[in-house]
Image 1 (cartoon, rainbow, N blue to C red):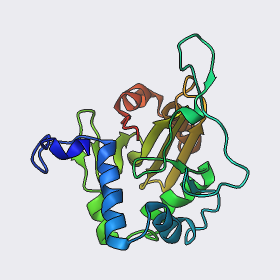
Image 2: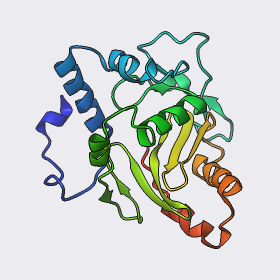
Image 3: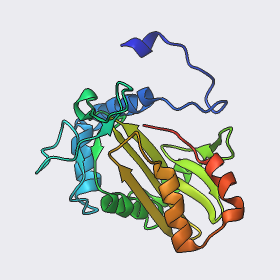
Image 4: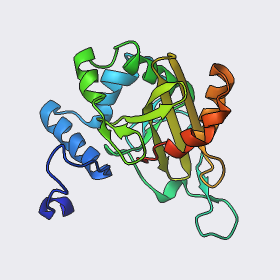
Length: 218
């Protein structure tokens, strides 16, 4: 109810601003149109057709065996704390439990194989609005310029977990990095190192690339 009294930050198409609230609004729209929950729609439209057997919606799906805990130095005492239960998700702005393999399968299905949405719809999704860091943001997708060509994907941060998913269309390359220690390591750095190992070293522009990585956390 808090967002209803707020004025828009800008006219459509004039400014880019990322907000979790927008994804919750989209969830409400989807439920009103289909009569089904977001979790049910994700399972019907994505998890089952793509064979994402290790992907679930937190708080909505039963998760056989559970999932790993997320850790962070929550109180700043230099020790890691299990912060998994401090944040509850499962709405349109987050709460997807998955694996690197499933996310890589999803990225290829979405960007390379046209198994998720129609090509015309994907083109709209990839109509990026420029940011201030040399990249851009589309409909739930970030754009980053790399030494191997532009990269599409997204990053995430919540409850002790960090993630990044990158797809480089010119190389047909996908890299996914997941971490359950938010106080140590950088998934973007790890992803870059992996790409460098597979696609070849480009150390002369390495620092520039890292400065341009978009950090839009959901």
